[in-house]
Image 1 (cartoon, rainbow, N blue to C red):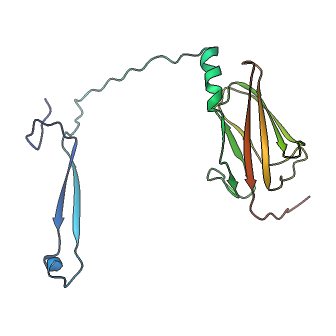
Image 2 (image 1 turned 180 degrees about the vertical axis):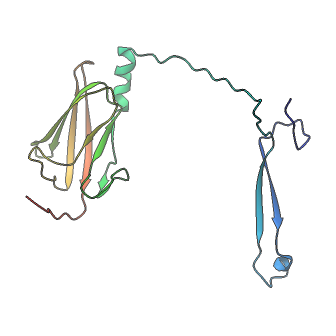
Image 3 (image 1 turned 90 degrees about the vertical axis):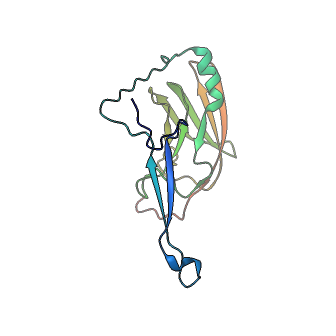
Length: 172
């Protein structure tokens, strides 16, 4: 049996108390100081048992085709960094919600193929290291990512803006 420390029939999970700490706060002679305390109303014990169920995952071609609309790239626009990057040499953008097989072709606005990425893994992500086919950093600008999904018979086109920070190549 749970004990309600508020002795209340309303199922309140948390409650808060506010305490004024400075008696001079109301006279204006010092800054007010307050203490906010948040307390649990129903405290779990070792004897409490919880059980959770969820529906089994389903996978169908119809669901995968519907998920094509969710394919995206982030960060977009890329402004010199991605908060997932670990250092200045690990630059990338991430394509998300991809099926197992995908071919990503990245073009500049002149229609020149900059990079081709092949994905054949169960992960839903594919990273582009912002390098061209010759392993040199790409220039700032707009890019078009054409994503071919051969198992689904679908394609997706994304626009991507790259605005890199000032770069100094340590070696060529």
